[in-house]
Image (cartoon, rainbow, N blue to C red; front, side, top):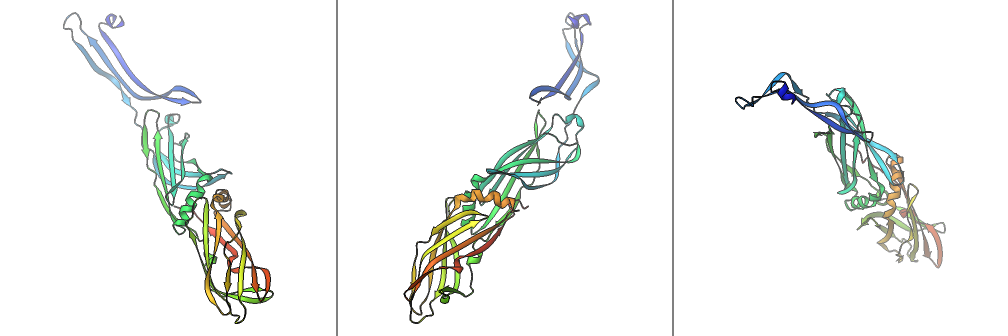
Length: 344
């Protein structure tokens, strides 16, 4: 009716608004994404024609400018019993005006693999995006339950593994999502947990206050490690210089701790006897509970990714008809392990 009363002429205005969820409620935001004005005219009684023409100040389109990243870095955040936070700081430039503030958020997906095993796979959303040059933080979580799996893979790699982080980000403008460029990161994790067991120096084995054997060298390696078990085979080049008496090593008890987390407290299955004047290489098998690496990880992060492995071993030494419990120095010692998992 208003169209006919106005001589078959109508001013038409089309507006498209953004809608976002604010504090749990869906609201129309004070931001016009699209606006157009036109005159709508008809001539039903004469020509029957209909026409639409833009009017003065016929509206505008609001353009959302791309948010760009100028740099980023990550560090460990809160360390809990079951998981550790990874805090990533992003330096960005947001060329859009304040009125986009309630509309704009940044969604970031982080996936980190260590030795091909997924260690972090999480998403965070940041809603307070500064205008102009600014900085935002997002937090993803690294569950400790996956540590034994990637640690075993790391050991199978000879303690040298690739660390790859993929960061996918999008600027969420409620009505659409626009990609934000975040660089992936690649680094190498290297450790040497058996370093002090690979030793070419000569050392004595004493019993009853005298040297009964000479250790010429030792070497060690992991054999088929899994997320449940880590087997270390230690080879020792031993010499019995006594031309008259044989020497037997048996009941080798060992304990291995890392940052006060016990990985092993057991007895090696082997016993060895060296005849008078004999020199040969013998083996000892040490078995670790790799599932305990989940408990180790938070202690490692709290100490700045630095850990100390403590090994102790004792054995019964028999020679000349006497038997005595003695420390095996070539199986004992401390080894420092450092890492930088979040390195660029």
